[in-house]
Amino acid sequence: MNTAMPFLRKIFIKTYGCQMNAHDSERLAAMLRTFGHEIVDCEDDADVYILNTCSVRERAEIKAVGKSRYLSRKKLRKNNALLGIVGCMAENLAENLFKLNPGIDFIIGPRRISELPAILAGENVGRVALLGEAHSEDAGESARDFSSAKICASVSIMQGCNMRCSYCIVPKTRGPESYRPMDSIIAECETLVQNGTKEITLLGQIVNNYGQGVLEYGSGKSPFVQLLERIDDIAGLERIRYMSPHPKGFREDLIEAHSSLSKLCPSVHLPIQSGSDRVLRAMRRPYTRARILSIVESLRAAVPNIALTTDVIVGYPGEREEDFSMTVDLLNAVKFNMAFVFKYSPRAGTLSASLPDDVGADEKDRRNKILLDMVQKCSIGHNETMIGHGVEVLVEGHAKRGENKLCGRTRGGDKVIFDGQDRLIGQLVNVKIMDSAITILRGKLIEI
Ligand code: SF4
Image (tube, rainbow, N blue to C red; front, top):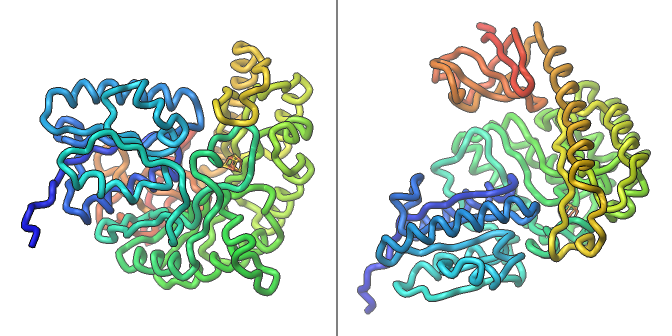
């Protein structure tokens, strides 16, 4: 009989990048806890440092490599300490990471994260690289720690992406799409709700592509809409969101779901990337500006006050002034509540990396600033229209600043701060909006 004690660790995890990465880190922490390891908030208390990295932009990679060098110096002062890089940058830069920082002990791509406990089980880890390969049966999902279920929780419904947008590294780092079985997703949502979750955000690279080619359409409804309908039926759940859909698969059944499903929040993040059909073709984005306008029109007809947000890239190779003007024009026409604007930068391993990066840095800055100013005006304008109105807020917790201040979100996703007692955390309350800033609304609790 093997009586050796398992080698238990104190683990610090730092996350870079998107909501999907934040969700992966949460799952990773839960999985490591089930193996007896402790997750610590402070790197000084740790003997294993894990950076869960992002490769979407070069800056995120530079920051993560810098942090890894800092941690490898810290590691030298401890016995048996380990430094690991997991996530998209691990997959993208692969063994080159060992050259960039010889202090790294292991690198694990996003599809192999569930193998980390096996690595930590040994006292002498050596240098390990676990990259590529397919997702497991449940699309890479590991057991979740429901005891720490949050009021607002994310549930991953798929992994990977089958598209090949010219600028994007995700298909390389996360692999092709694989979908979780619907029953497994429903079971996870039900257990979250039993443990106190009130709002669930479904996550996927193209969330509305869920089940395509694998699960059946029923009564003309896509597998994603069928999934939304089943989640909408879960008693005790108050709100459903999803992130991010692709304009390509945004069909009538999903638009109809926004008016028929009472828990589906009136907010959609619709990444347009550009308002120029010529640039969209170059980016290999399979839709047109006319299609975006038609989706927006249908969504607003179904749900008049729906909150719309988007992503835009400026300075893509070959983006001329007239292309940029079309993006400005599209943003003016739609008036998104918020837009995330990114300056194009080539990423090694993507299709566009071989194109000349021919929009100069100053010009990218100028286009970026024009769009940010527009977005800010739209956001301020939207927030001002909320003043004087009563809104339903799901109270998520304490506000970062201010004694007795609570914060939560409206169904449209606006952040609201107001005075209230702790007992309201996790409740739906009505708040009258009194004041607004660029990104927040301030309100007063409406006592019933
Ligand atoms: S749809 Fe395009 S941008 Fe989105 S993850 Fe897939 S390849 Fe990347």
